[in-house]
Image (cartoon, rainbow, N blue to C red; front, side):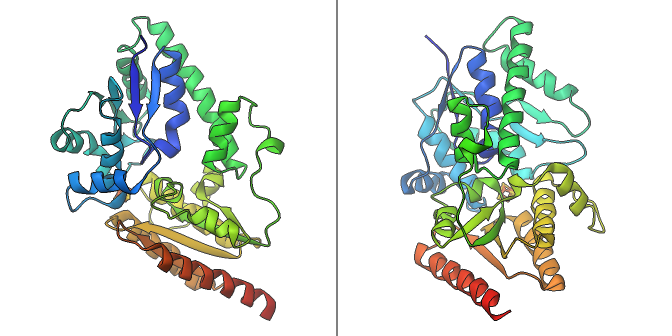
Length: 330
Ligand code: SF4
């Protein structure tokens, strides 16, 4: 019987799921993803998590709990750094400890360290450590990882073409290799809105209250930081007087600055999570730049477990109306 590895549909799921799914399945395991977020999953997480945790971390607890009893292993890496000379938010670092101490009846945790801050030697060591749990053959482990990297690269290429993660994941599942003609999901819109925020907030339809779909229904094409090439993000973020050492914050600020320079972007929305220190900082940096340039309207939305959908819809409608009004009055 195949070993079942659980991956919570939260936090870095939206960024690295294709990589880890390919890695584990290539090693003969079955990957089980927690169910899409529901009120029940969020409530379970809120009850278990410490009060000070940000909304996405609380939600992560709920997804972990959704996998209990369904899997033999829970993949919960201790993420320290995912690219050279940057760090990830410290909340990711403590995640395996927080989960272990607050959640009962956990399956075996795969809580290997991932730290690419200095170089990739540590990453390869970590991959081998995880792979050994599923194969005794080092060649198989590294072959599985190489396959996984190729799949991840294809996923990122699709995202950079402006394809949203749900569609990119189905393209990979269909195995059509990412043909843009078969995957372009957004056409026939008269507005373009850049939605800037952490992928786990933007793409979780429950906590974002289906923001992307709502914008599309209002006639907007939605662009997100995942569509901006890393070198563009780097170049824009380097305009800050001090280098940002949070890789996700850098991506948000760099992509927001890039969207500000694009004449086809009609408005920018920054989606922040309640309880997130980095979001309040990056939101402020983006807002200052928007005010300085005075070229596009800007909306800052903060979500938490109590955010009401009606309030979000009203603000979105007002924002979109204002953009359209601005366009006709110019
Ligand atoms: S960056 Fe913000 S939202 Fe993400 S885990 Fe850290 S505190 Fe939470």
